[in-house]
Image (cartoon, rainbow, N blue to C red; front, side):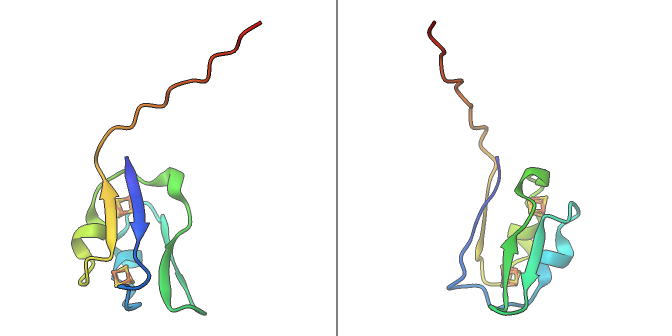
Length: 74
Ligand code: SF4
Ligand code: SF4
């Protein structure tokens, strides 16, 4: 679950997603003029960034991804 991708080829650097995120996950890179994911672990899968991006550059996955623990053998 959570934000999975910002397509930098599509992102036009409007900054809307950075303002829209209530969890402060996203930041704006002043050099590349693109948004990027800074604090992935804080994402709450609210989808606000994906919905608000005017060029559909953001993909948020609402699917639960099961983390399978690696077995330890003694
Ligand atoms: S809202 Fe979309 S186009 Fe605007 S900065 Fe974010 S990812 Fe880029
Ligand atoms: S899904 Fe919500 S919490 Fe996660 S990055 Fe987008 S706006 Fe922020």
